[in-house]
Length: 534
Picture 1: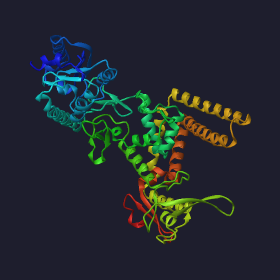
Picture 2: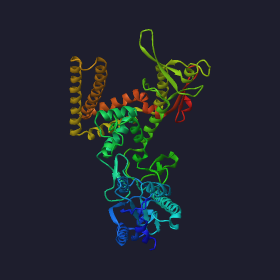
Picture 3: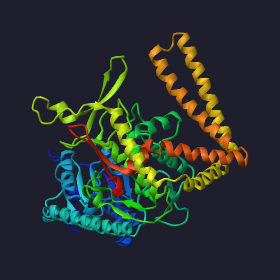
Picture 4: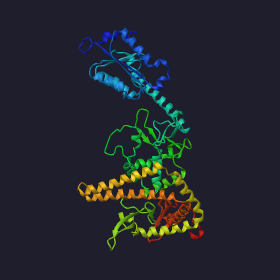
């Protein structure tokens, strides 16, 4: 203990004046430190430090305890509070049990010992390591090596923890903080998730809308219009940087949901990894490096729906324009250069808008002569493609086989309808009607410009018409058995006539459509065509 006898005599300023020390007792304990035994406990550290200051008659300003904080993280609440007191000149001595209590990152530990403490005239003492910056000792000379050893220990612990977590991931156990939107933690079983019935209907609705042909952006607009809370809002997560779009659904969020295999009942983890054990920053992993375990929990959507939605999303990756929409969007390509065809709007002789398909390569490099124009009316190509698809469908679709399916669909629709659903739909229709009346009033009073009125009026009117059509379908389902049979025949007939015009069906049947320089159409189906029609 000869080192500690020099505390009083060493307590002098540069002018030789005696220094009155006001000590800060710093204590830190992390989860990995607990594995070393009770000797590292907060109580043990504090007892040791208190005994030391009593033996040497030191004045203690405050005790700073960071319980549950890693030594590689220097953004600890009580550590920051201690630094604030140092800068306020309330503390001029820091005492810890050992150097690892100060930190396990040798770069930051060295910064505080070699620069920060000396610059602020702070004396640092580590009891078990024999370190005292107030005296000239050989123990101080090997301090950097001790810091490196502590850093290596932290790195080793990090590897072990990462290995344990990875093993749990491979077993299909959930180790994240919050489950994906639509699920919640199991009330009794650890590392397991179950369906959150409160928001599960929202997820199913998103998949149904996507399957119906709506884009991610359109779905986001619809959810925002219906005031549906976002996943972050529902989970009560804090917003780091609030902005004008905070609390609103986005197309990117919808796209993430539609591509997440968790909704298939598969546990998907390891999509992001930390840069290192010293940093909180995470990097996205390639899909091949994700940890996916199938069948770990109850699915929210069936595999067929997920597959079809995935194909619909994939078909939109080849299109850039949001201005014009057409049935073959994202599916049609130039046969010669392989690039997606662009669409442009041109006026015909009668002043009507007509969409034309053009080669995008020709558009960009016209003078270079890389490709040719390929110009053709969009509806001409669409009509030809639908005719070919209809020819294929008629080989496989037979009304007699479809009729039982239509009957079952009508029965399920009739059973699925509830009084609450009818009331909710009628209430929604009434609200939209009131909204239309208000828009008209605002236009007459001059509060709403004509252009905004037309845009908003058309949107609200279309939604009301859609709901009215759904309500009428429900009412038809309540008719007599004879009417039900007529309705089933009508559904079959309508399906036979319009099935080919469904984008969902087209994406399911075709990989791509190519237009040649001579305006020939080549369709690449996802199946082998019958020989008679190949």
